[in-house]
Image (tube, rainbow, N blue to C red; front, side, top):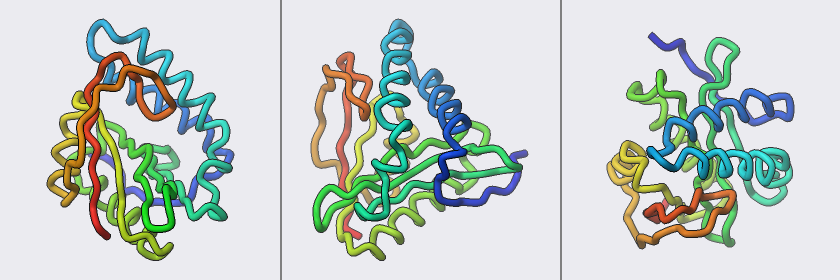
Length: 173
């Protein structure tokens, strides 16, 4: 049984445990035959975003980033990143496998949406890969509407590429 969790803002001292969490979860997601691609994606995500997380998700930019902590261990992350005056993007919503299915992801999403509304946003966007079937079901169940599907060929800090299908969603706040 998982311990109770708390949410708090990311601190630079969280770097190593967050890097470990992102690495572990992305390795779990890697489809057979795409392990090397996912290792490249993990390295790009950590170097291209996590190293600059405090800057990327700065409050001055109307952004926020949280960690989910349990028994002094980081078991999840999530953030919102401004995309326009009215839109924010849900980013890096990861939760350790042993904590899934207990309502924590819903609490994470609820906090992100409440913070987005408090910051004046009226729409939240997000994307997820087809291989993340539980995430796809969760977002649809949570009122997000699919707005487009794309095949991601190029790797970025947001997607592994490799021809994976990505679903893009939005929800009015």
